[in-house]
Image (tube, rainbow, N blue to C red; front, side, top):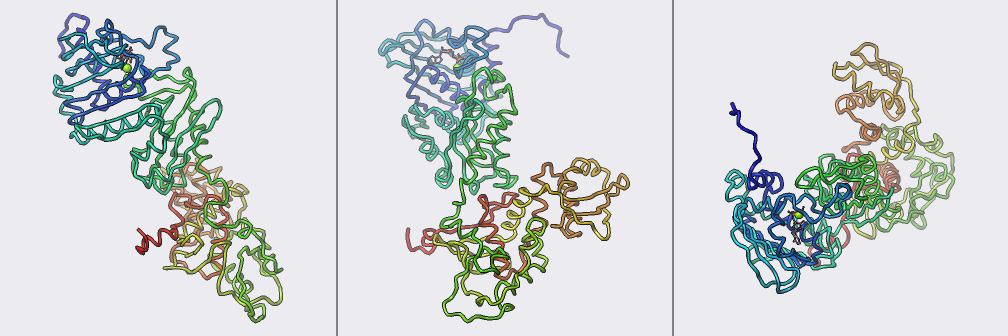
Length: 603
Ligand code: ADP
Ligand code: MG
């Protein structure tokens, strides 16, 4: 039991050490505080040196406006700051610092030397050991501030033990310097470890240049830079290509008014915008700068100042999501090289083709003999296509005018062409009953037939899915519910109805399916409902994605060329076709250049 002692104020050095527990977790957090101070002092050059991951030495020097000689001691006093004067200031903070805690905290857990000059040649120095002043003097130095910290946490063994290997701490230091450097590109940043320069960012670089120094080339070169004003906010930054998504969220850098933050709202907005382009367990690369009026965000949430609280969280979510989505969406049907949209969309000119709406552009071989209708590509293939189990799925009757699937009673048509084109693409065949091969002027494309078809169906459902067409089942199907599933089905009840399901909850645990969307066979409809019950999809998008997955042709389904062409044509029309609704890629593309490299024809 704790003894009942007298209440008394803690001595200053103990107060500072307690504060240090929150402000300075590790060398990287010390560096962050010192860089913030340098930026607040208007520095345009900040050089950082570390040794042993920052544990034995951290030195940060800047060319900012410096600290007057008679205020050095004050700068090391808790709650002494030049950045706040009134309570109103606290509600519209423009500087990085404002708590007056960093320097005294750091000085209480290290050997600390602060030298500063407001005028070149006329500076002062102060030295502190574990919070106690040990030296004060004049020093000749250039204008700016130079802070040297050695033996961090030497007097706090518990903290010292908690530090990781120097290499890991170095990485964390480099990470924070890079993050600060990305947001302050007017400043020259340099970080060195011992005698080695880890990176140097000259002043005035652009975001891409700085990222290129810290991200792998494949990621940095595939990014899209953006800047957008929405609802009085400014969102800008850079977005990684979905194809370079990664397993961890460590390349999502979020900033609020140039302050690096960790924020769940912003993070989930970014992830939500990428949903469907990457797998659920993957993370994109993204740098997001949010500029927001200072009085709409509270930065005084935690001593480390990496958390913020927004006045209107949902506005932030919507703006970031919109900003990212707008910039991820392909601007037009130009994502695939060489596609002539008119050829892909065009309706062929012969009556048969027109009524079939086969947008496949065929290359007619000269001098081909005319043959009877039932030998033609269209008349022979389409009915077959329309009666296979794939047919309902491939061009869901729900969403096509029924006439579109009926062959025209036309007379003579040319023989099946040997080469079949889709705009600038040429269909070459199917591999392993799973992948469709296309060639184009820009190389070779492998399309995953299931993923591509899922995408096609998902888009159809999303565009027209709420029509609620339903097909009664001859034999209603019963689905047993586990007690835990009753509320799941109730949650999605209305949405399922919109999709075209007609359901009846006969008892708490017996669900009866009376009708289903025409896109799904009764067995598939049952499978779909079982998936819904197992996965708890939340949104209509989730339900469409599951339905698209259930209805799509599968890997292992043999497709003849007409079927393949139908699918490819529909898929090529989609502006955003490179991922299935679950985020898997639908296509792998090797450019001619990449093929040449693979065959070692060029370096
Ligand atoms: P805060 O930044 O919250 O004010 P700090 O403890 O980090 O608190 O710094 C205390 C004060 O010391 C600052 O308000 C500032 O006036 C001064 N200071 C610290 N670092 C620098 C620097 N690099 N250049 C100029 N002034 C500095
Ligand atoms: Mg500070």
